[in-house]
Length: 256
Image (cartoon, rainbow, N blue to C red):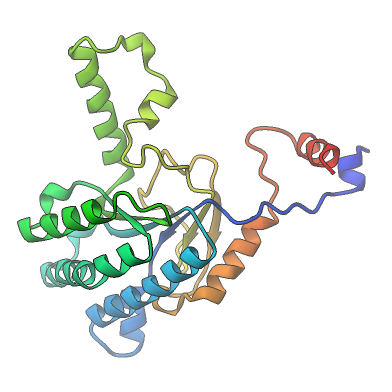
């Protein structure tokens, strides 16, 4: 029996650099209280503020939030319209506050589907905060992982057609440089609230070696303590990245 099996190593990965969250359960939270679904989304927006505050205080580098997927257009038209108004109103209320807290805003997804007013508000927030050096807050809106990989492939193809690169130069690194999250570290910790256990077309490329954490907590009830529990789970996982547990053990042992 190996040392790694005889003496299992308790690891501490520290805080994740990048946390990605699917904020699920707003509608069900409201329905349980016999309220319209939009009330749940409004409560969810307040939960976002608490989680952002925690990440700022703990010096998390990146927080990515799945706000609206490319498939969410299939929801009732009235709910989609109210979600767009909530998104616009939240940006209106929070952009200056984010800037004051040194937060950089980055919205990813196909923005052309949004109203001109919402597109302008997104651009205003990104421009105002682009040089901030604290938390990068990524809002995925009208986003899908399939779309992200397709648009990256299109950009690479355009460069090939223009003679800027050769097809033989396509690598994983090149594709990653053209994803909507280019320049950001891949998520270390993925969290989904609401009890579902799937990633729903969110950051498909980027989640390749991410640690997953699922909770039944509905998003409006997800608070800083719940986030601490998720981070604590992450901190004590053995991250192998293709290596064996014994290799990880020996590497950690040699650094003691």
